[in-house]
Length: 219
Image 1 (tube, rainbow, N blue to C red):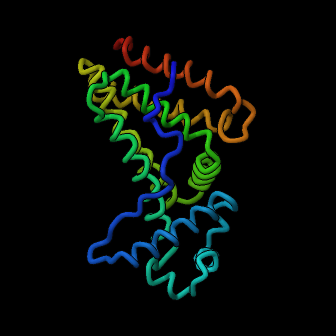
Image 2: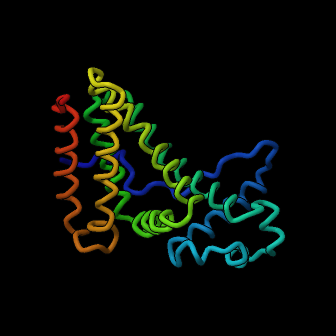
């Protein structure tokens, strides 16, 4: 199985959402803030990402930061929105790609996710947030929202491959594929024990996922 050249190995870190009545300089400032917050999350963890720490990383006064984000919750909400928008852009390009069969789109979606799991950003960021979500209801809600949005394009492909299944069955298959891939982070993510074997793991995973969707039978 060869990875297609038009499947990016890395997903853009952030796509900053527009705000009503916003202006380009304000958007650039918000992007700078979000990138600083993302860097702190990856390098030092969520607990280090205080508003004052982010302001210092941006070289701005605390009051200037709170002009754009009044609370850390506001900052986290827009940061995770910007992160998932970057994934949605790539997923949509795959799912709605012309001239591809549903199985080819499933393969490309999974390749994109599994490649991304090997990056330092993803290996550090998402386990950190999932661990925190066990104790922080706000982060818990944001993370489930993020993954639900990430699964929607995959659900489209599964539904197209198996229109005979119920909506609940299609969703169950989608969820299984999603958590199976995400679980590989701790074993084959960036600098993990099985990182060198991720290529083989990708091949096994994608063959298994395609067969699962194609051959799944109702109980």
